[in-house]
Image (cartoon, rainbow, N blue to C red):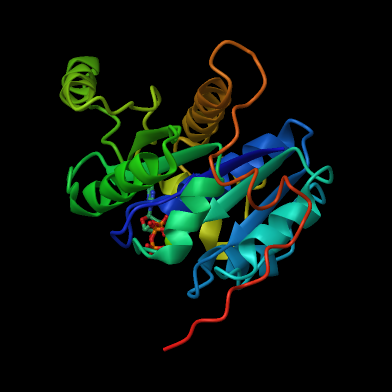
Amino acid sequence: MAIVSLANAKGGAGKTTAALLLACEFARRGDRVAVLDCDPLACMTDWFRHGRNDDRLSITSGVTTSTLSDHLRRLRGQVEHVVIDLSGAADVLVALAIGLSDLTLIPVQGCVMDARGAIQVLELIRYIENNARADINHAVLLTRVNPIVTTRAMRTVKLLLAESRIRLVDTPLVERTAFRELFEQGDTLYSLDANRVSNLAKAQVNAQAFANDVLRLLSPTGEAVRHGPFSSMCYRAGRTVEPVPVRV
Ligand SMILES: Nc1ncnc2c1ncn2[C@@H]1O[C@H](COP(=O)(O)OP(=O)(O)OP(=O)(O)O)[C@@H](O)[C@H]1O
Ligand SMILES: [Mg+2]
């Protein structure tokens, strides 16, 4: 079971869209996918309410700090992928999800390059890495990128991030009507009408390439997925850690 989280402290960066594209693409390929909705606004859950989705996809809503590990323990062996949609925060739940994930993607709007929310998450990742003495597999994902953005411009962004030793997902998510339309009626990229939605085929190719990149990031040389540093403490151990009472 591979776990991917989407995190950016800034609202509207494209976390839920990227999470949905990824979950749907994995399910389309025949894998069982569980989505954990950790956002109290529950936009992802709203998409599932339309009920048009694949039966290989499931959703758990209202996931909190105290239930996240339990859900992962329950899902172990039941699904091939878990996609965690986080709220626009950099709080304890986000830190826990990052530590439990095998890959954390940090969506940043390519057109705006407003990196403040992403920097908060990157700082949180460094904090966990230093304290847990472990690497957190993570990468920045450019979202809502203008379709006519040049390869050269992308290369420059990549170089800038590389200087700070931050990996970039090779395929950016392009600004596409199809990605917005998904949420209108709970559609997938394959249930939308190509006569009504412009560049639908391009959006499908974009989502497929993005999912391929994510699989490569999870397992760069095809070896087994390296699990997040908290996984052995929480869901992989098969035991429940009782909360310690706090005395004030
Ligand atoms: N690649 C894209 N092309 C077109 N529209 C997009 C794209 N990515 C995101 N959007 C739109 O941008 C808005 C914000 O996206 P989304 O809800 O995915 O962000 P978020 O990071 O999950 O926000 P929040 O922090 O509020 O949960 C939505 O209206 C969504 O439809
Ligand atoms: Mg969201």
